[in-house]
Image (cartoon, rainbow, N blue to C red):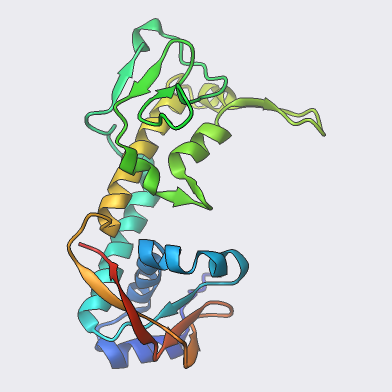
Length: 234
């Protein structure tokens, strides 16, 4: 049975604050957008490692809709990343070798992240460094893919994991290379949406006086006190 994760209580509060047109879907995307806010993730990094997120109900309707719109764009991007075109400007050399098997991707040197040695024949270069600003569980999405899509053997179980097996299963020998390129593009678009280089600023709040449940675990906070300006969504 399908069940939404937004309570009627928080819907009523949001509609009272931002208008009757607000739906549970709008609140969902507001939450998704806020969770990607670089200021929020940085300011509460330690808390987010230990507890479920708590989010503010912003004061102004325009701020609510800015987050909701950004969250909707991000969700669409993250759900459909495999259909993204390869990022413009990123260069792939060595494809003519026809050697697409991956063993373990790596950077040419420590800290030199504008290039990735895909294998002994193929190199991905001219990667914008801002692509690494999109992180998942404390690691850039690009490096997460590099770590996961390799050939490895678990030292305890002896089980061999080979990223190339999936490429064979889907009948696309370029699958892993294409995945890396799309994740680079995904990362760049995500960074653009959350407005790391944007011009929109949103006042944010701390010192909670009231917490409102979104569902069984997550909470939205209200009556926060202003402490800073965070760079927000363009």
